[in-house]
Image 1 (cartoon, rainbow, N blue to C red):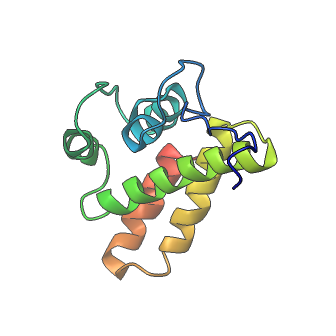
Image 2: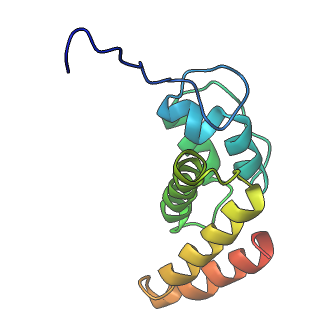
Length: 130
């Protein structure tokens, strides 16, 4: 970079909301209106602005025992993918797309989990991601 060349400072504002909020991992995955809509479509009402530890602890109760972290990680991953699709491909983030991708990833997960969890996961998918 030459000192006389103008540069642009990247924006740190959340790309998934209109709140003019800094895009932190906590905001993006848990507190943005988009992520609240995603999680709200498969869980109970959640509190905003609490620590990530408390978020995970609270939300784990809504998911089948033994599969909580898999659902949380894949849910967070798919929020990230929706963000990237918006930034790099100008595809608007949609909760229905998030749910479709999450379902696809969880269906693939069934091939890697213990037999005793397969039916539980399939029942959860059929209940919450139809």
